[in-house]
Length: 440
Image 1: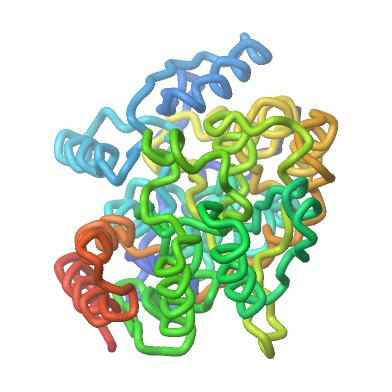
Image 2: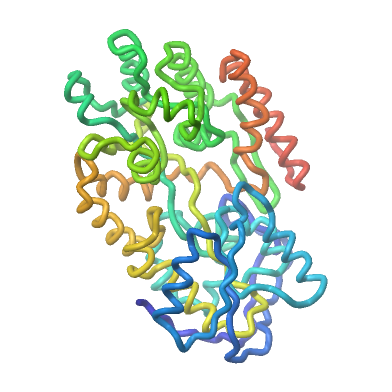
C-alpha cells in the first residue's frame, strides 16, 4: 500500500482557469480562482463509488480500520447520466452534502466540476509530483486544466487489434500492421471464409475505436470551451471508406458486439476485432466464451507512411477529490491508494490501470492466467502511451451523437462516408448547446 505525505493541506493554493479544457491542453480560460480549503479536522470521509469500484473502497477500509469512512454507491455517471453534476449543483446551493472522494466512469467531469468549484487541485501540494509522474503518457490529460490537475485517471481503455491466433495460423494469414493490409485481408476473408469478421462498426463507441485511431479531426477540443470539428479530413474519410468497403463485403459487422444477435451468430466467427484493452477479458473471455489459447493482441494498424503510431480509447474512469473536504489528509490518502495500489489496481481491478507500476502487476496476472495465445503485455503497454491526443474529452457525448446520427443511417443502408457531413453538423450542434465555440 502506498501512503503519501500531505503537504500544505490547509494553505490557500492559486489555480488557473475556471473552466476545463477537455482535451487537456494548457489553454488559459481567463482570470484565476483561489482554492481555500475548508476548516480541517479528522472526521469521516464520504466516498462515492459505482458497483465495480465498491471493492476498492471496502478493501481500503479493511486495510485501514482506523480511517472513518462512509461508502456510498451510485451509478458512477454511467452512460453520461450527469447524476454527479446534478447533485453537486444541489450541494452548492445548500452549502453542504459534498462527498470527499468520487469515482466517475466518465473522463470529462472536469468540463463542469472545475467551474463549479467542486474538484480540488491535486498537483499544488496535495500529491507529490513524483507520484503523479507514474501515470501512463497522457493518461491524466482529461484531468488537466491550464497545467493544474483536478482528477486522477483510474484505468485506460487503449485500443489494440485483438485476433484469433489459431485461425490466423490455420488459414496462413499474417496479422496486418497497416490499415491498407487490414482492409485487404478483410476483403480476402470475405471470399475465402465468408461469414467470418474482421471488425464491428455496430457500437456507439465505433468512432472511438476507428476514427480516433485514424487521427480523425472530428473532436479536437482546443480550449476550455472551444472545439474544432472537421470530418472531411483524410483521417476521417479514409477510415470511413475502409469501414464501408468491409461492411459491403460483410466482414465488418453492423450489430453491437454486446447484442444477443452478435453473441449468438457472430461471436465464434471473429477473426479480428479492433477494440479496447478490456475486450480481452470482458468480451472474448467473459462474453463470447472463446476457449483459452486462441486470442492474442497486436498493435493497432497504422496508415502507410504515418510514422507516429496512434490508438483510440474506449472508456476508463476518473477519481475526483472534493475541494469542500474537511479531511483532505484522509481523502487524499484514499484517492492515491485507490489509483496506485497494487492490492487493488494491480490485483483486483477489472481494467488496465492508468498507473504504470500497477499496470505491470495487472499485466503479469493476465499473462499467468493461461487464457491468451501469447503474452499481451508488450502490446497493451505500448498502446497505453499511444492514445492520440487530438481527440478531446468534451462535455458533449460523442457516443450519443454517433447513436443519433450515424447508426440510424447505417441501419437504413447508408454508407458511413455519406454520413460524415451530418455527423459533423450534429457534433457542432451538441457542442454549441453546451456553450462551446465551434470551428469547422
